[in-house]
Amino acid sequence: MLKYVLPVLFAALLSGCGASLARKVRIGEEVAVRQYGTVGLDLTFDVENASRRTLRLEEAELEFFTGAGSLGRAVLRGSVEVPGRSRGPVCSRWKFDFPDAAAGMVLRKRLEEGDYARLEVEVRMTLRAGAVRRRVSFERMPFSEFLNIFAEDRMRLG
Image (tube, rainbow, N blue to C red; front, side, top):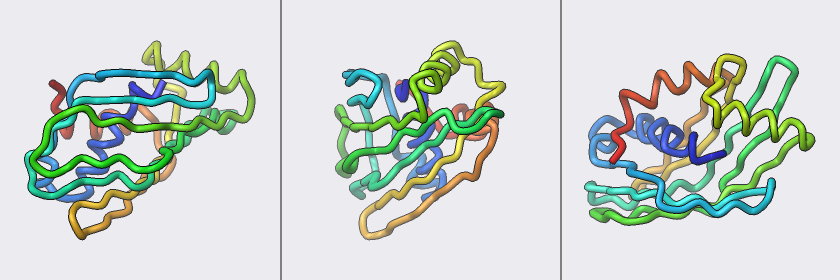
């Protein structure tokens, strides 16, 4: 489920750290996904960091909503580090927390089918770039709007 969202999340975070840094990081194709039932997954992407600074995603949390309330949230377990001037697979571990099994199924179905019209998201994250730490958050907004802001302009896939 998160494989549809993580590259956009990372792009949103980089946008808060300045244009020069955002231009030096590329998020490539998904390399591996290992799901742990409905409670979490390990997600690996190919990432290139052309900057000299090591990037560390220290905290990240996405909470998804529909008109009826929260569908659940995904929380980064541990941190994700991308060494400076490197390219290679970067693994992240995510834990899911759903109010009930039905909410998790609804969220997964909407993400997989691209049904973003009735989906909202709230995002909180912390990135460290060298010695600089930046906290970024996005209040509850339509998921389609979140994708429109960050997916096309900020992300270069492959």
